[in-house]
Amino acid sequence: MTLPPSLSPAPHLRLVCFPSACVALDAEKGSVLLLSEEAGLVLTQLRGTGGATSSLSPCPAQKRALVALMDAGVLIRGEEARAWARVRPGVASSPNWGTRDSPAALAPIPRVPLRWYALGALALLLVLGCGLRGRGGAFARTGRLARRRSAGTADHAAATRVAYSVRRVGRLLPFRVACWEEAASTAVALRWAGCRADFRHGVATDPVRLHAWVEVGGRPVAESDDITDYTPFEEPDE
Image (cartoon, rainbow, N blue to C red):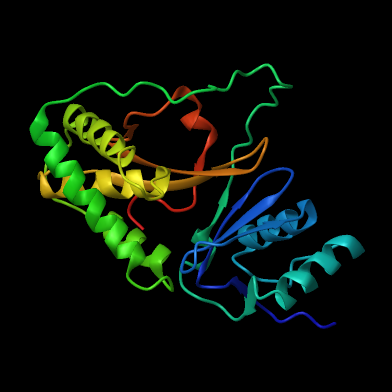
Protein backbone atom coordinates (compact mmCIF):
# COMPACT_ATOMS: atom_id res chain seq x y z
CA MET A 1 0.00 0.00 0.00
CA THR A 2 1.33 3.46 -0.95
CA LEU A 3 1.04 5.87 1.94
CA PRO A 4 -0.39 9.36 1.37
CA PRO A 5 2.12 12.19 1.88
CA SER A 6 0.39 13.38 5.05
CA LEU A 7 -2.10 12.08 7.59
CA SER A 8 -4.15 13.68 10.35
CA PRO A 9 -6.23 12.31 13.24
CA ALA A 10 -9.96 12.44 12.54
CA PRO A 11 -11.44 15.79 13.73
CA HIS A 12 -13.88 14.18 16.18
CA LEU A 13 -11.17 12.20 18.01
CA ARG A 14 -9.01 13.13 21.00
CA LEU A 15 -6.13 10.72 21.64
CA VAL A 16 -3.75 10.06 24.52
CA CYS A 17 -0.78 7.78 23.82
CA PHE A 18 0.73 5.88 26.74
CA PRO A 19 3.84 3.67 26.51
CA SER A 20 1.73 0.50 26.37
CA ALA A 21 -1.50 1.64 24.69
CA CYS A 22 -3.38 4.54 23.13
CA VAL A 23 -6.87 5.72 24.06
CA ALA A 24 -9.08 7.48 21.51
CA LEU A 25 -12.12 9.45 22.67
CA ASP A 26 -14.94 10.35 20.29
CA ALA A 27 -15.60 13.95 21.35
CA GLU A 28 -19.08 13.89 19.81
CA LYS A 29 -20.45 10.56 21.06
CA GLY A 30 -18.34 9.96 24.16
CA SER A 31 -17.33 6.46 23.03
CA VAL A 32 -13.80 5.20 23.68
CA LEU A 33 -11.53 3.09 21.51
CA LEU A 34 -8.51 1.33 23.03
CA LEU A 35 -5.70 1.06 20.49
CA SER A 36 -2.69 -1.24 20.53
CA GLU A 37 0.86 -0.41 21.58
CA GLU A 38 1.96 -0.48 17.93
CA ALA A 39 -0.80 1.95 17.00
CA GLY A 40 0.36 4.26 19.77
CA LEU A 41 3.94 4.14 18.48
CA VAL A 42 2.78 4.99 14.96
CA LEU A 43 0.69 7.91 16.20
CA THR A 44 3.57 9.20 18.34
CA GLN A 45 5.93 9.09 15.33
CA LEU A 46 3.43 10.90 13.12
CA ARG A 47 2.87 13.50 15.82
CA GLY A 48 6.60 14.19 15.77
CA THR A 49 6.59 14.73 12.00
CA GLY A 50 3.38 16.75 11.91
CA GLY A 51 1.67 13.95 10.01
CA ALA A 52 4.27 13.67 7.24
CA THR A 53 4.74 10.03 6.24
CA SER A 54 7.88 10.52 4.11
CA SER A 55 10.21 10.24 7.11
CA LEU A 56 8.59 7.06 8.42
CA SER A 57 10.22 3.69 8.00
CA PRO A 58 7.78 1.48 9.90
CA CYS A 59 8.44 -2.17 10.59
CA PRO A 60 5.85 -4.65 9.26
CA ALA A 61 3.91 -4.60 12.55
CA GLN A 62 3.76 -0.81 12.59
CA LYS A 63 2.79 -0.69 8.93
CA ARG A 64 -0.10 -3.03 9.63
CA ALA A 65 -1.09 -0.80 12.55
CA LEU A 66 -0.93 2.25 10.30
CA VAL A 67 -3.18 0.64 7.70
CA ALA A 68 -5.59 -0.47 10.44
CA LEU A 69 -5.75 3.10 11.82
CA MET A 70 -6.64 4.40 8.36
CA ASP A 71 -9.23 1.67 7.80
CA ALA A 72 -10.82 2.43 11.20
CA GLY A 73 -11.04 6.14 10.40
CA VAL A 74 -8.67 7.14 13.20
CA LEU A 75 -6.30 8.64 10.62
CA ILE A 76 -7.45 10.50 7.54
CA ARG A 77 -5.60 11.78 4.49
CA GLY A 78 -4.41 15.37 4.31
CA GLU A 79 -3.25 18.11 6.64
CA GLU A 80 -5.30 20.13 9.09
CA ALA A 81 -4.20 23.08 11.21
CA ARG A 82 -3.44 22.00 14.80
CA ALA A 83 -4.63 18.47 14.03
CA TRP A 84 -1.79 16.80 15.93
CA ALA A 85 -2.49 18.89 19.02
CA ARG A 86 -5.39 16.45 19.49
CA VAL A 87 -2.84 13.68 20.16
CA ARG A 88 -1.24 13.99 23.58
CA PRO A 89 1.46 11.95 25.33
CA GLY A 90 0.10 10.21 28.42
CA VAL A 91 1.85 9.82 31.75
CA ALA A 92 1.51 6.18 32.72
CA SER A 93 0.47 5.36 36.28
CA SER A 94 2.99 3.48 38.38
CA PRO A 95 2.06 -0.22 38.70
CA ASN A 96 0.65 -0.75 42.18
CA TRP A 97 0.65 -4.57 42.11
CA GLY A 98 -2.48 -4.57 44.24
CA THR A 99 -0.93 -2.45 47.02
CA ARG A 100 -3.08 0.66 46.51
CA ASP A 101 -6.24 0.63 48.60
CA SER A 102 -9.59 1.44 47.02
CA PRO A 103 -12.47 2.70 49.18
CA ALA A 104 -15.25 0.16 49.71
CA ALA A 105 -17.85 2.80 50.60
CA LEU A 106 -18.76 6.30 49.52
CA ALA A 107 -16.72 8.90 51.36
CA PRO A 108 -18.65 11.38 53.52
CA ILE A 109 -19.23 14.77 51.88
CA PRO A 110 -18.54 17.85 54.00
CA ARG A 111 -21.49 20.15 54.57
CA VAL A 112 -21.54 23.61 53.01
CA PRO A 113 -23.80 26.69 53.48
CA LEU A 114 -27.34 26.27 52.16
CA ARG A 115 -26.98 28.86 49.38
CA TRP A 116 -24.45 26.64 47.62
CA TYR A 117 -26.93 23.74 47.50
CA ALA A 118 -29.43 25.86 45.58
CA LEU A 119 -26.80 26.85 43.02
CA GLY A 120 -25.44 23.31 42.72
CA ALA A 121 -28.92 21.80 42.38
CA LEU A 122 -29.93 24.16 39.56
CA ALA A 123 -26.70 23.50 37.67
CA LEU A 124 -27.06 19.74 38.10
CA LEU A 125 -30.65 19.77 36.84
CA LEU A 126 -29.55 21.82 33.81
CA VAL A 127 -26.77 19.36 32.98
CA LEU A 128 -29.02 16.33 33.42
CA GLY A 129 -31.71 17.95 31.29
CA CYS A 130 -29.15 18.75 28.60
CA GLY A 131 -28.15 15.09 28.52
CA LEU A 132 -31.72 13.81 28.43
CA ARG A 133 -32.81 16.13 25.61
CA GLY A 134 -32.32 13.61 22.83
CA ARG A 135 -29.67 10.99 23.52
CA GLY A 136 -27.80 11.65 20.30
CA GLY A 137 -25.10 14.24 20.91
CA ALA A 138 -25.71 14.41 24.68
CA PHE A 139 -22.01 13.97 25.45
CA ALA A 140 -20.98 16.82 23.13
CA ARG A 141 -23.76 19.11 24.39
CA THR A 142 -22.87 18.75 28.06
CA GLY A 143 -19.18 19.08 27.24
CA ARG A 144 -19.72 22.37 25.42
CA LEU A 145 -21.92 23.61 28.27
CA ALA A 146 -19.23 22.80 30.85
CA ARG A 147 -16.37 24.34 28.86
CA ARG A 148 -17.88 27.79 28.49
CA ARG A 149 -15.45 30.11 30.20
CA SER A 150 -16.12 32.89 32.71
CA ALA A 151 -13.97 36.00 33.02
CA GLY A 152 -14.42 35.96 36.80
CA THR A 153 -11.93 35.35 39.55
CA ALA A 154 -10.31 32.04 40.48
CA ASP A 155 -11.75 31.11 43.87
CA HIS A 156 -10.70 27.59 44.88
CA ALA A 157 -12.57 27.68 48.20
CA ALA A 158 -15.86 28.58 46.49
CA ALA A 159 -15.27 25.89 43.88
CA THR A 160 -14.81 23.29 46.61
CA ARG A 161 -18.11 24.28 48.22
CA VAL A 162 -19.91 24.06 44.87
CA ALA A 163 -18.41 20.63 44.15
CA TYR A 164 -19.55 19.30 47.54
CA SER A 165 -23.04 20.73 47.08
CA VAL A 166 -23.38 19.08 43.66
CA ARG A 167 -22.26 15.72 45.05
CA ARG A 168 -24.72 15.87 47.94
CA VAL A 169 -27.63 16.75 45.66
CA GLY A 170 -26.58 14.10 43.14
CA ARG A 171 -26.85 11.35 45.73
CA LEU A 172 -30.48 12.29 46.33
CA LEU A 173 -31.60 12.11 42.70
CA PRO A 174 -32.89 8.92 41.01
CA PHE A 175 -30.62 9.53 38.01
CA ARG A 176 -27.09 8.59 37.02
CA VAL A 177 -24.81 11.23 38.50
CA ALA A 178 -21.18 10.24 37.99
CA CYS A 179 -17.99 12.27 37.67
CA TRP A 180 -18.94 13.65 34.23
CA GLU A 181 -22.24 15.10 35.45
CA GLU A 182 -20.70 16.31 38.73
CA ALA A 183 -17.78 18.10 37.06
CA ALA A 184 -19.97 19.65 34.36
CA SER A 185 -22.47 20.90 36.96
CA THR A 186 -19.70 22.30 39.14
CA ALA A 187 -18.25 24.18 36.15
CA VAL A 188 -21.68 25.61 35.25
CA ALA A 189 -22.45 26.66 38.82
CA LEU A 190 -19.07 28.37 39.16
CA ARG A 191 -19.65 30.30 35.96
CA TRP A 192 -23.00 31.50 37.34
CA ALA A 193 -21.21 32.55 40.53
CA GLY A 194 -18.68 34.55 38.51
CA CYS A 195 -15.77 32.21 39.19
CA ARG A 196 -13.27 31.05 36.59
CA ALA A 197 -12.70 27.29 36.31
CA ASP A 198 -11.50 24.68 33.84
CA PHE A 199 -13.52 21.55 33.05
CA ARG A 200 -11.16 18.63 32.51
CA HIS A 201 -11.71 15.13 31.13
CA GLY A 202 -8.84 12.66 31.11
CA VAL A 203 -7.65 9.07 31.10
CA ALA A 204 -5.33 6.97 33.26
CA THR A 205 -3.90 3.48 32.95
CA ASP A 206 -3.49 0.43 35.22
CA PRO A 207 -6.31 -0.20 34.38
CA VAL A 208 -7.51 2.18 31.65
CA ARG A 209 -10.13 4.46 33.22
CA LEU A 210 -11.66 7.86 32.50
CA HIS A 211 -12.50 10.69 34.86
CA ALA A 212 -13.88 14.24 34.70
CA TRP A 213 -13.02 16.98 37.17
CA VAL A 214 -12.72 20.74 37.63
CA GLU A 215 -9.58 22.79 38.15
CA VAL A 216 -9.26 26.33 39.47
CA GLY A 217 -5.96 28.07 38.97
CA GLY A 218 -4.45 24.76 37.86
CA ARG A 219 -5.48 23.00 41.10
CA PRO A 220 -8.00 20.13 41.05
CA VAL A 221 -11.14 20.78 43.08
CA ALA A 222 -12.30 18.25 45.72
CA GLU A 223 -10.31 15.38 44.20
CA SER A 224 -8.22 12.56 45.68
CA ASP A 225 -4.44 12.35 45.36
CA ASP A 226 -4.59 9.91 42.42
CA ILE A 227 -5.93 12.68 40.15
CA THR A 228 -2.31 13.15 39.00
CA ASP A 229 -2.60 9.76 37.24
CA TYR A 230 -4.97 11.27 34.66
CA THR A 231 -3.86 12.88 31.41
CA PRO A 232 -6.46 15.35 30.05
CA PHE A 233 -7.66 14.75 26.50
CA GLU A 234 -7.54 18.50 25.83
CA GLU A 235 -5.67 21.53 27.03
CA PRO A 236 -7.69 23.93 29.24
CA ASP A 237 -7.99 26.56 26.50
CA GLU A 238 -9.14 24.19 23.74
